Length: 162
Image (cartoon, rainbow, N blue to C red; front, side, top):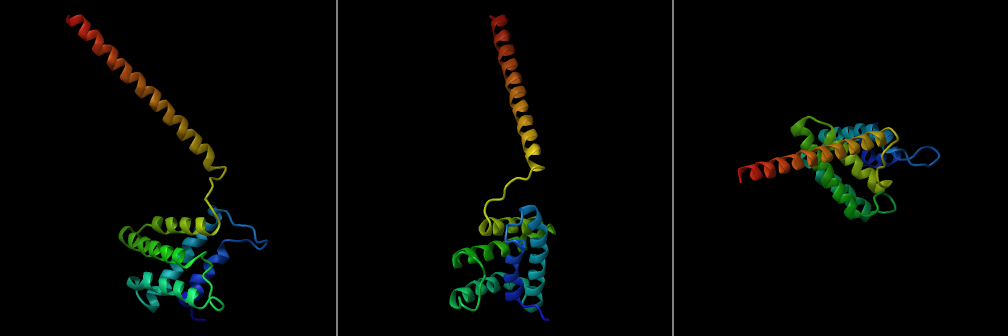
């Protein structure tokens, strides 16, 4: 079966929910989303070109708006669909410039937040955040002690001078 842009683009929503219709966690969604977006980009490249990515995606948004009974993008509104089309085109440009998947991951995060809601930290990420927060607190304390020491030394040197 030949893959076409509408089928590849619209099947992204299937990655968001499990069989019981509960939302997939962002950590589970991300690798599948990146793989899916890479497939979409390959399809667009094969049928059009990288330069046409934004136009092709925006046209899909328009088709959904014009033919709501036969086409669905699963976006809340056309403007959000178009906004994410622009973000994906920009992410693709960044990916081509850097060779990194990080821009695509950023797009997947935006899509997940649109479709499911805010990305929440997992249990494994929370201790790391707490540890980095406590490290930051120590850095502030040490910085304050150093500044206080410099101030005391400066005052002491001025007192001895007079």
